[in-house]
Length: 383
Image (tube, rainbow, N blue to C red; front, side, top):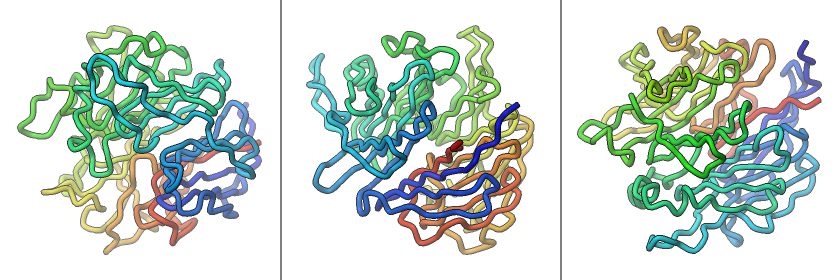
């Protein structure tokens, strides 16, 4: 029987620092701790689930540039990485690149204590084996001519820079890795990153571009289902997708499951959250994708959408959210769920509000407001 947590901690990364919100297991009261790294851009704050106390912060500072900070006492003291992610000298005649910022942090496999993966902007993949103190680039991605072609140039990327994200370590196999690139598609390795294959079959691209060209694919967020590890969900630039795998690589095809979303809302967005206990349930937070992509809530009426049948139908969840004139959105790392028997959702907005959606998102209320623009939200259960 699953032991209930003693408390919850919400990890909030923003454009101007990071906050920890400590709450009771019933999610009734929250105490704010912060800001940490006041004034610095924090792309993500991540807790190591293997020890329950080590935190990593992906930071971009005015004087240090892009770096990683590490705390082994839940944020009371921080130490900068001795060797943060940095590209190696280029090979294969490729042009040199420099890391603008670390965008994504993923703890390694449970059996590999101290291991972490990091994704950067521009697109790069890095690994640490000492708890985040030093980082080594993976040349199979960073210095491969084919990958570099798929990555395009910095000018080709997203408005705040191209990025490697959605790093997944399969709980069954430490050598099985998946990541996404915006732009540059979804990629998979079964040998700890020595070789890779693309996972783009069935995905769509912007009208007028060639879907066979990996460069044009723009996954926004890819998630592995916790209760069915052979199922992947994806929020893509061009819709919501699901892949169900049966061991036959030739059958690895994405199915678009967002077509049943309301036409006036569409199925474009950034975050994807999968239910911790039900493989058929997931949530998205759509944004306006009309014309030049305003990247705001459709019609200024924000809402999460939930499916309980793997995408056949979708339900709008807006009870407690603003009914009108709310022109914010939610970034790809800024929406998550806890793992309690009836999970709550947590989301942070581009206008600096932190919301909780109780009863699987059925009832929304504010936890904090007037924060800087929120880049990432995670939640941890602490014994």
